[in-house]
Image (tube, rainbow, N blue to C red):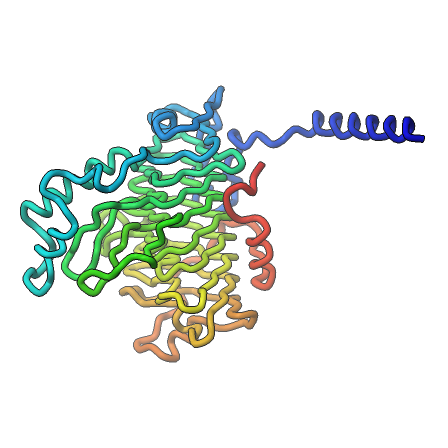
Length: 410
């Protein structure tokens, strides 16, 4: 009997192996964006490095930086935990800079306006030294994809003046700026976890972006403002266009998703077209997203606002923006009303439909207009055409929980 059982087990194992051989794991490196998956599918679509004949696997910061540079087609796999060089903020500090001296020199009780002078120049020199280690520039025609469990810590991905880039299945944590600068009312920081600047056709999918083990919420206040060490989680700026952000997790951050960094339309008019769908946005205080100029489709996203957080808003209606928000779901804590979801930053309209707040259908635009004057309009002048299935809002939280974030592709 035992011999028969062993034989049956061996036959079953062979059958599984045969099926596996016939149905191999998908080749994620050669996958391209579906033809209808948001704005990045427009005008020729986004293929990343799919034309590359070979792929490379990287395990260190320097290997990563070298592999993603240049414009030839390339597929780059990240394996394991890749970290910034093992340096402290003191290691990067240039001669003449110290934080106590900086705080003393630019105390608003004695100083007006943005910081300037030798101490500010020493801060900039310190920041430049850190930037050389932190920022990883990604060239055109690149697919950057994490193997299961892959992460970047203390590093920032910069898609600058590039076309046709795919970033998938990768956790990026703690793009930490050692040297924030005082700008007459607020602390300004460098380094977004992912920054898209002057670029087109970018697909960001199944990523997880956080502040890691150094959240800004734990930082002190100086001059009445939080001493932030992180900038955005994912910013789309300086005339970038045709971007899709899907099935990702954004967590525990203040100024999170800034799409358009100036009211000046010179470089941004007709651009900054972005699709945001099936993402988890948890513990984001503001900018989820804040939009200027662009036609932005925000659908099937799950927002969670924890109790006690410094939440101010999610959808920032900026100058010339045209946000089309559809079938999203929110969990708001007691005492936070639905009108807080929208904030007006000089824009005139937002289309909003099918929103669930704490399990109930709520007209968020109507809630905003009921307590704010003047009203925001509901006609943004366009209707999204490029998108996949728009799921019912009641299904979104479960779908996103099950499928969004790094490590969900294999």
